[in-house]
Image: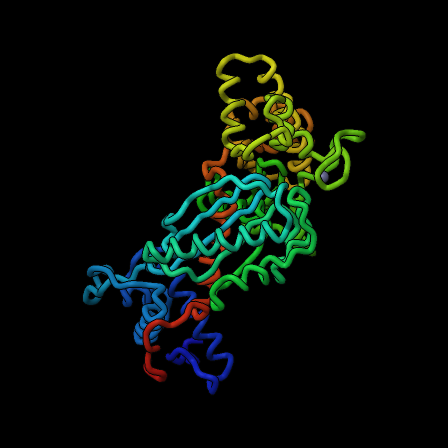
Length: 425
Ligand SMILES: [Zn+2]
């Protein structure tokens, strides 16, 4: 493998396998730095088994693409002279934007994983048609990208998180019941309003949040976990053996539409008795604070956190009716959780969105019902845990997907300096 290495950024004349090898080695170098922290060229060469001259050339190219930077002198152990440390660069980054029924969430981070932008704004998808939503999404994307740039981070790409079925390869939202979207070409539509070289992805919100949870969350590194979005809709991101489960068409994880109550309430998807009609935020609010239920708003739609804060206030005030309503939602959370345990045997079920904010009140009844209904019950040792990532977990995962793509293929990031000389080893 080493004998086939050639330096250089590549030209049309180079055989494809050499370009692929170069790309793989750039990725390997970048990944090594991400996993192990700043390293000298010599240390990278020694750890990866690549020639020192090859590593120098690879690092030159990564510098030219602004994916790494040189920092102070790094001692690489007893052997050899100390060299300059090569660290991931904070100069390039990515944006994730989540569009949901009642908010837009934005997360911007750089290659090092540092959070640069984190915000959420109220948004009323129900009162906007698809075109208007896409216009607003485009404006939010433009502003976020500009803000990232203003903060000294060049955005390479953006991922939109959507609560629904997404054809990831085409960037099309096939169906998002709670937004009322069907076959919406989000990536193509956004591309019209954004820089032509920007990479634009679209993915399911729960899948992105599950990836964020697996990477940075409270159960990070847990190879079998389920993440549940706690919004008006409820979606699941399922990690099995360290990998996101997507299914044959990429539509797995629609756990909010598990039928749990024959003859129950009508769901946003048109079916009856779906799980989210028992545990979604709209149902919690309807049960706990009926005077503030969804659909009753006269003026601007309240932020979901305001609605949850009101429930928390009434719980703190000792309102028994509210406590019973929350416990009932918790019981249904355990009911669906048991189905997930029977299917996937996860070690943890991570509760996102509003579930996390009410976790102390929801988990006792949820855990009890899960133990009662899951076949493996206590033997499965599955616990509900509250996410720390808050309402921006999906957006964070969206930015993370772009960063992962940069690391997988560093040549997708434009050169800003002349490439290293071809043929130099
Ligand atoms: Zn449904």
